[in-house]
Length: 282
Image (tube, rainbow, N blue to C red; front, top):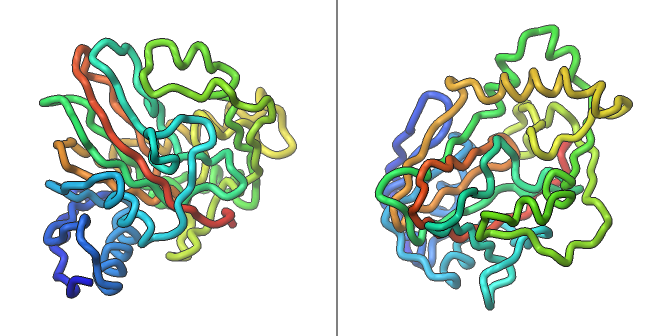
């Protein structure tokens, strides 16, 4: 393994996000370097690496340094690599996936720790990704709203995707599997989550997957949930990342949300995503 390097970490904003320089993540890394990268992730919520040359095998090797790999249950995979999800928008596509503020796979009983998205082809401009700091979203909640969510749980469901397979697959090259079982992925999670590594509290709700507050119908839940969704996406909680070919983003799914911007009609964008296993939200 290579010797530990001194990482050069440059924050993007005052809320979240930092670029990490001084490391070639395609190479074998020392435990100390991996620990420093993990520390940067915990400090900034999402970290970005530029000018990386990754093949599927090296993408996988780097991802596995941070935990077990998770296979997405509703989307397809790169041929020959069941643990790598293609995120592709062809020039003829009208829509993209991820174009709502969301936390990946929160409908699972054990949602992922995070995801590592690598840019293989990007347009000259457009296709940025937004990230939001859910620690700040919790910290800046008005006191009455904090009282309403503390100790409460909410149901998360994948029905936003799986109840509309044909509709969502139309106009998108990254398609939902058409052989999905009828059984819904459904999980009950705290609305305020305590991060298992930092010990900090953060909001854990998101528009497509948080379906209803425990004990309430969806209709009864939506007035509060909609307030929380609007609050979480306030600009002062966010950062915006402009992709280049060879960039990799590694986000902490436990304390951030993200949003893929669809502003590049007629242009192609191809990414590979891997996902790291997490722990049950507490």
